[in-house]
Length: 248
Image 1 (spheres, one colour):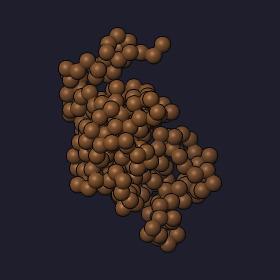
Image 2: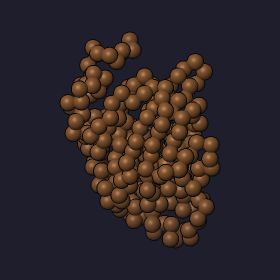
Image 3: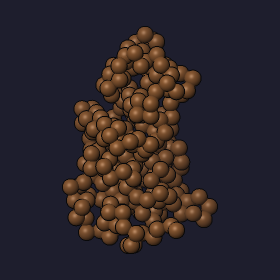
Image 4: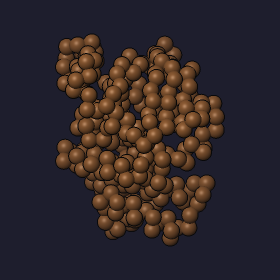
């Protein structure tokens, strides 16, 4: 579904992506791991078209997307943002149905609200939450609303940016389980970036390790503990010693 071929991106003298090659099969969940500042978010932004790569190819469902109008592609994806990114001035249901209310194919408000309530129920929130505002919700509830918005349009591709950031371990586990269930139910292709190893094991079919601007290793999540790769081994066990230099 998604293929990156020799993708490069620099900001001035800072070469963030230095030839990324990665394949995300249709209907699979790929999790990208790596330390802070290794380019995970930049990689995601390149796929979405928020950042234009300097060179390389990004192919989505067989079509090159760099340098093209991505509006059609954007209609096919959903995204759960790291901080929730909910609109404070909109009610919960208006947040969930934002694309239905403001996108190219607008739906009547009553219909959009009904769909939004259905998606809220799917992520474990009661219908009464629909008319509340984000500020009235806990962090975990806000994350669920963000997840409901991500799946509102039944997307083929879903991106998750650090989905458990700021959550306690119990709520993080709940969100991880919901993501896994929903991705499997929908048959969607998923790409997640995270530091949280519990998320990796809960969400991933396959894992890719990004370091020094390239993919150092990729393989099934079941091979993660015995990858035979020094970068992966150091990262997943949180060791100070190894090929990844700790910033002091």
